Length: 307
Image 1: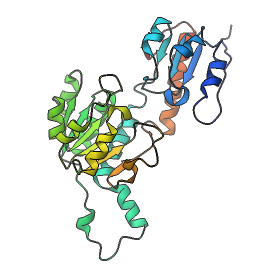
Image 2: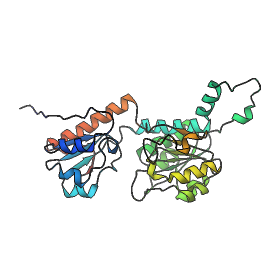
Image 3: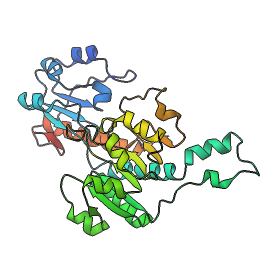
């Protein structure tokens, strides 16, 4: 007998409207979603409208859209797509480091608007070296390790890291030094925030942390916007407490076009594109589908975050 299923697909622009979603899920057993940006919060209200739901498969590493306790109570399995995107996100983290340090977007505008003249004072457009400096990684998961590998072997950087648990293998492979957050912030030339969003990491970087950083430090966030106190970041940049920032994520997304961060020449901003390459997105989509189908066929998913 051949397995088959009926599929209901939202083909509109942006997030599925909540009323449409709730109306369509009464009989579904599996929900395949891009996360909070596509369907919003997976909460008690949604599960009340989906009594037959067995699995929710996120096409993302993050699963902060899951109300974990409610899903456990209802025996709804949650899955994500880790590991598939590690190298792609690490590429972006380093792109932001390089672009911010060498003022790439700022100088791109400088040359295109005709400001490059025979009389240009090159001292005024100097950037910062990346090679042979110190990189601090907050959150040494698989992506953090991929960033550390690029830093050590590609740019001869010293690597510091702060994590819930020590990673002896990363220390051995990359010469990474485990340290507390204060030590990392005060010693690093470049700081990459790579933690998941949890109650413990909510605004883990705020006013106090920015004041600890070197005035020459570059701050990179490729985790979640809510892991940073955004107003404190704005003040730190405005007051010259740090050199610059490279941001893939924001407190509110899409970011408000009037956000002061978007007006700063020492900020490189991209629209939450950590995994956004065609090859990686296709691999994530396939992995999410495999997770969902496994549960519906009575098997264990590859990547359960809620069993």
